[in-house]
Image (cartoon, rainbow, N blue to C red; front, side, top):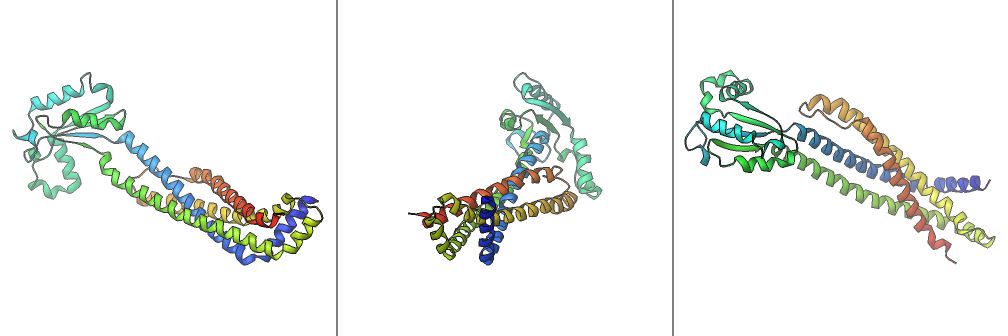
Length: 304
């Protein structure tokens, strides 16, 4: 009976302030959608980084006829220089760090290059202009600097490249986009909190006589406060549910139906399983912020 009375009061407050409630719902919806997008973007960055760290290689390019680095003053890398690099990779110092390594001759690299650029370049590009290369997969990709230090400046070695360096700009761009989404979400959440507080204050002001009567007949502060808190929570829950639906639809149509078919070089995308994990987070954030905001807003009407 008591719960029914409290619930009825909350619903009455929602009807009286319908326009403000709609504003709260919309602001909560937009802000939590940005929060969900930011969480999923960060998860995508982590997934991509882990995927490429397992597959990225450190490439040790041997000197070609067109190399200009200090270690290539003698021209094309000799067989002895190539064997010296192989011996270093197989040595006791570096071998524990290496998962596997392979060697691609200049002729093999030349043929691979022609496949990429087309046979028309066969008359322009010659095998001796292409670098022979050692491709090294590390057990821990963060140790790539050790490989670079070991071979940089070595005779016959043109340069040492970590393939993850090519992906860093992408990761950095996604991280910046995440920060922007978080910034927008924080501003929108602040707006939502202020709107909820304003809505509750207006509702309390419109029912100030009722509050005074309830206090005179001995109603507790919690009994008076609860309907107002529920007003804010109901509005926030609606906004949170809409934001959750937007996140799920965005992942399904935007990621699974669109990006996975058009961005072929990324094979690991966040899916509905990850999006479903975000849903309770969004609803939880909405409920907690609404309850706290409404609780603080109604306090002034409960002072003795």
